[in-house]
Image 1: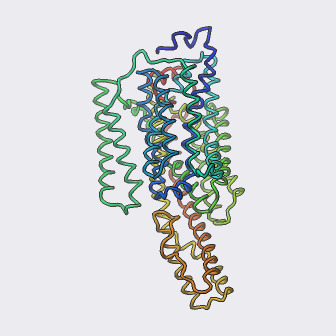
Image 2: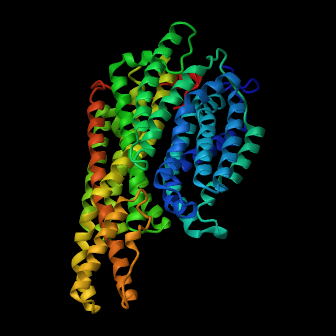
Length: 570
């Protein structure tokens, strides 16, 4: 490794500017994690302002994590080759410009493209953070710096959800959702200037060569899989969607074959396939990917349930979401500090079961209370779900890295991070398909729940019985058509009131009933989708059983060295 030549990291005299440099990378990591979650509570506002279709909304969320996952390992390689400060500055500048492009987008396509760019720039920026910490701090300070970085990273999810809700609710200068992206501009400018002045550079003395072909094949395989999943429902699953998914499998097979050949000949493959010779690591990685598929989908449908289903404001949804983050903080702190070092893999299994229990309780409460569900009723299931989430996420990387040789720790860490981002993107696509398909099938439930009340109110308003029957038939058709819409918030023609002289009163009765029926349908569909998540979490727990019984949490100094040498993020 080529450390800072003026102040080597383990020399007695340390650069007094190192904590300023650390604050810069801390801000960068915070911005990245903030942008993963901040957009969730703004989705309904974006949909209304830009007229986005629901498949486009899924892409607005998935584009960031998808491009982040695709470029992540390559970003670490570039830092090793060209210098981590240089690549960090390029990533930060690009991230700031992409954030501005997101905030100024005039249509969904422009926003999706900007989110792709934002994720790719984050993938250049983020892998340098731990490497910069490694070359900036001596060993005795490194643990403190990493602990602070981990704590700030954990809080970013909560801040993202709450800040997103507050900014959208404030509607600054009539800009609706746009400040959630524009807020990155001043932060990015300050960080750029500070990094240029205070940050030292470093690079690997034996940098690996870029695997351009492997990178292209990996990106192509991911896009060929996720694109048809996101677009299929909107287009009623044309034949080309299945062709693309088959092509994704073929491309992935070609990627594996190429990586094996490159490892034998040129060397420096994008993915070290020897890692998969460790059965516990391979199954553990599969569990990690599956976990993020379930949680990535949960974050999407959870936000839709609160805003599109219950009609809550972005601020209320965002502030309610904080309870999940509180639970995650508790679970992460307890698991890393006390449980994982003693109980090893059993903590991961317990975390998966706790998360699943939170899903089950949340789903039961949603179905039981329906349109009347309140923020206070969500507190305990969110704390439980978050605690399970923290118990899985916090110790997993350390536990899984313990299953591979030290020389492969960097590559293994890169795979785990890529699996997290790819799983989130797949979760948005796959669980979105499950959710909206079930919402269509569930339309009669909402009608049945509100018809008795509607009938009584129509009769009280003086509508004759034949008219009541016709209005109720039209109302049922309206709810059914609305649930079948690609965009559930769109108003189909069958929902246009044609009431007679009593139109004002009848219209209000039907509008209120329609909102309640919609909330009931969303609540039951949310519960159904959570059962899908519970099934995924059961698979996650089975995968974690493959880890050795004696696996314990261990933070090894050679892991950090290898991760920096390989250019892989932790």
